[in-house]
Length: 441
Image 1 (cartoon, helix red, strand yellow):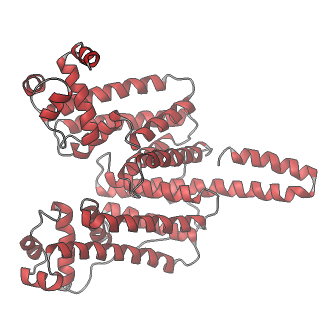
Image 2 (cartoon, rainbow, N blue to C red):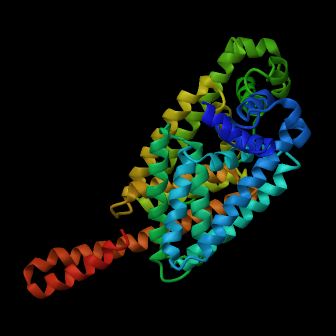
Image 3 (cartoon, rainbow, N blue to C red):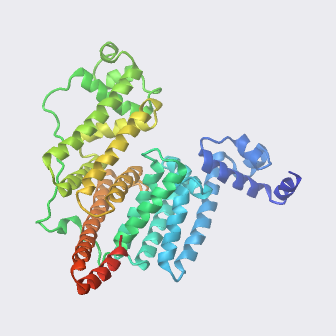
């Protein structure tokens, strides 16, 4: 204990406060830590903290700047390495630690990111860092062999934010392992491609395509119960269950408290019914996709991607209510279990669809598409909703097209290998092709 205090006393108070704040902000978030707690962890006091930084918020900005400078230094070192493929794999390992909550610096970045949208001091600093990070990652991806380095960098960055969202309730180790599996899968897809992925508009017309048509505005006036459900979803999403008042919900629904209580009994039960209605609607949409394209995995997957892109873009009123309810559910104890059950069911549904494409890694493909969806929902680059939907569809389309083209090559290689038992000549040819295909698995 004396040795530790001696070591602490050798560090200046300002540096001790920054180090303590970085660790605490990363672990508990900026709002979850008090000034007294930071001062105590730094073996200092509030007066010293305020003298150096003025406020907790200004201290958070200084901490963010310190972490960004450290990460920028590591990026500069990575860019000068002679082995970009190893540098990219190192980045994947580092981000896996951040996704698992094992890296306090990554934790701080994510903690500040969660509230920087409303922080005039932190947001420019963070936005600049995120843009610079993406550009550098794209450069390393290109040097590592990806013809479209920017597309791979976008996919990897969105994947990281998606894993951090933790839609399936994994423990820290599971999140880190999931990120590594999906990130290496995406890296192999993009580095195996001989050229840039063609945009969606240039796809061959003969390729089956699925569509998702946004729901049209109803031609009749909605019933009071439905209006109250829609208003409840919107206000629970905006304020939370506790802060949203019954009067406010009734007014937004063009109704009254008596009608609300007659249909739902209480505000808490209204919240549960909102959640149930949204999840039932989401499940119905997945069934509609299956019914519209029976037996056609490519069309079902294409329709799912269009559905998500439209939801992110805010182009469909039907999915708009679902999205608001789901966001509210993630922040409310009453809805978290229901939300988790749906997201696991959605994961199984998409895995079944992807299995129909062929290829041995269909489950990794479905996981990557869903996690990138959650990453896009976090909107790390502050895009408007239309561009957000376009970004998701472009990224998902690129991944699916690469998967289908490369799994097709793998299948041909296996067919040759299977026929090769007839003759030594074919066996040799099949073995060599299988070895080439295995590089891209």
